[in-house]
Structure formats: structure tokens, C-alpha cells
Length: 154
Image (cartoon, rainbow, N blue to C red; front, side, top):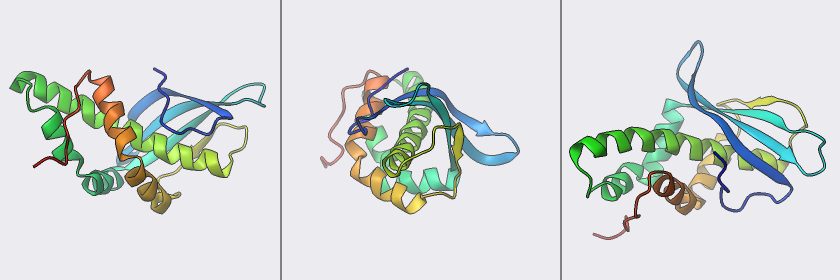
């Protein structure tokens, strides 16, 4: 799957390789692996982006993601809603990891396979995630083939 994650630095091409997946030996910790290719590089690299469940929950609360998701899935049957909620959670983690990767790309990364650990840049990630709320929700809605609902409507 390849999705253009909003305003991506133009010198990089980023593709989700796999994830989210549990990090071995670290309960409640997940990673997404991305293929990253810079125009000036001969080959690409893989970058694993790691986040803990606490970080994911905190960012979910900051975006009021559960409210947005409930509104987005309101017209689905109970059976379809449950499967969409599970998939939406996976997509949410992918989008958060993508935001964290974008921060690293903007500050520059070496042409080598690497891991962005869960303790790296989390303050900047929070700010970026909040600014990119529309990217995150539209990415999830698109992947789930949903017509987005206005989460600000009361």
C-alpha cells in the first residue's frame, strides 16, 4: 500500500511496508516499517517507527479519535462496525507512525536501515499529529471506504 501522507517532503518517497505489529519482548509496544527512498540515493532504506500503547492512547485522546470514529461508523451494522473499529485502530497507529517518520525526514536521516524508538521526538509528534488531524482522519476514512462525518457537529 502506498499513500501520500499529506505534505511530505518532496525529496522522499515513503511507502508503508508492514505494520502495525507488536514489538517482540516489549508488551504494549508496536512498530510500523516504512520503505524510504530519497531522490539522491541509489537505493532505499527501511525505517521502523515504534510507539507505545500509552503514546497511542494519549494521541487518540488529543484528537478525540474515538468520537470521530463513532460518528464515522454510525450508519454501519454492529457486525461491520466491530470489524471497522479494529481496522481503524490499526490505520490510526499507521498514521501516527507516518507523522513521526515525517518529522524525522524533515530533520534529515542517514541512508541506512534504522529504528525511530518510542522515546524519540514524542513532543514534536504530538504537535504534528494535532496539526495533521485532517490527514489522519481522511486516511482512515479512505482506507475503510467511509464517507467522513463532520466530527465537530453536535
